[in-house]
Image (cartoon, rainbow, N blue to C red; front, side, top):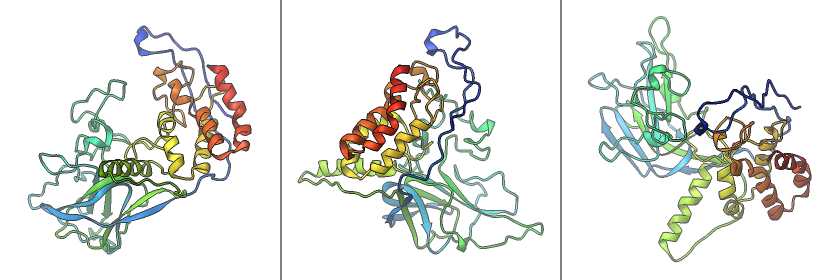
Length: 360
């Protein structure tokens, strides 16, 4: 069940030693063993109602749900019919230049905070600075650089100069120019979740009625809690727990609005608290096997639960990620054993963890 294509431990030398260790020339992440799903399913766990709905002008509406979640908007009564802004120019992040002239659409942009000067959704926090060079320094790119090239992360109609969390509801026109269907049939996005407290809807004469937000996470049991007489401690607890809930959708991610990758560093740092909050026996068992499935034949673990050449420059090369991050399956196996007494998991992963130790 192990497959690997043209993995070369040796590669061409790099003239600049500051770049980091030599990387293999060609790599394809191994394919793991196909088994039934081990963790509980991802499900809606909470329904939120808007704290406030107000107009931003020109058919754009802001919905504030009071706290950040990882989830989707739900339109129980559908969406109203769209309008074209009075001046014919759509606000930032709401343009759809790739549609036909008779296609109708409504855009929904999600975000966690608002820009202080404009009151619009702060788009840059979706991916740090929004545009950066993907390197360790994260230097900001000039506005327009990425989206001018198009591509899967920067579609050509993304005119906002940043990554977006956006849903678009479209009624395409037929050959005669008429639209089939109704926006009143829209209910929610079925493709992905977003991380948001705020949502902008554009452009309609009135805001949708019956709008709620559904918070999603893996449906494990919650068995821990905390309360005190100190409002700051209670508030900090709620913030941390809310962040954990938002990053537990089948993998433990670090940013629910970005790539949704499972990082070893986050799990090592957060798992002691998380295991006191929730029953993560099945969830973390799955996480450990995510790493086992992508282990290289030379014993190397990646810093994330599937290999992306992400932060390999900080490790020792040959497929290995940053060493602390890549040691997550060993640390988590030990913690899982201490917390749940799962000898079967210990036996099933011992060989793989020893291969990592020998690689180091």
